[in-house]
Length: 142
Image (cartoon, rainbow, N blue to C red):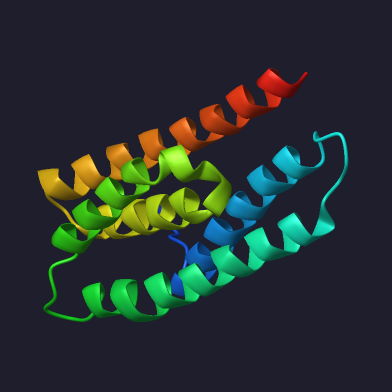
């Protein structure tokens, strides 16, 4: 009798789950910024959510989906989104850096080369930089 070998399968988020994660991170950071202001601006929170949701629909619904098709190479799109994530960090209030960063990480993990790894790392750095930008903004108001 053979011993059963346990094969551990890594579960990766689906395209829709990744888009929801991106919008959730963007909205969470935006909420932290909004709720630490002297006057809470609900409209800012709603607009930030809508911008992130529309951006995620376009990014994940069009670009990421196309990069995930059979035979397509994911790494070029991953690198583009990683660079976009870093470039948009100064405009952290737009809610776009988390959307681009999560797209870069999602596609970077699908690519099995060094460019995919680079996109994953740069996407993670952009997420941290975005959180740092919010923290700096909040600290400046306290």
